[in-house]
Length: 114
Image 1 (cartoon, helix red, strand yellow):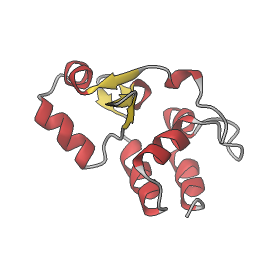
Image 2: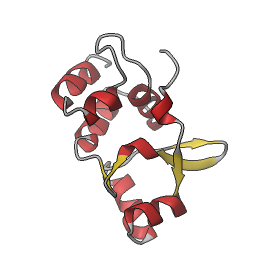
Image 3: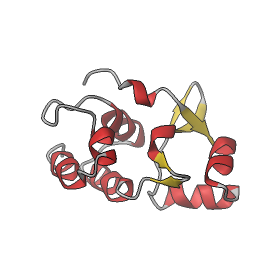
Image 4: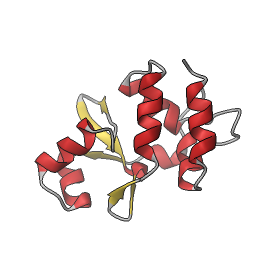
């Protein structure tokens, strides 16, 4: 797996997510619990890649993709890394493909990870 792409450099902590999403902390936790967002503990603090938020909302195609990755047996850390890293078969990172509207392609590849 190659290094995450440049768009993965910004990470949002829980207080950042409350501000960016303009919702209470309980709602942010629910979005994570219900797989609308996924994050990882980097530098000891739980954070979500900023690229997962579009126009103040979680990227709509992210939820089903997170569930597909979890079904394939990936941990949250592994799923985040996979979403951000260049994927050879797609020629770009899965998050870039999702942002471009190619969720079927991303989920097809995600299902092969099991």
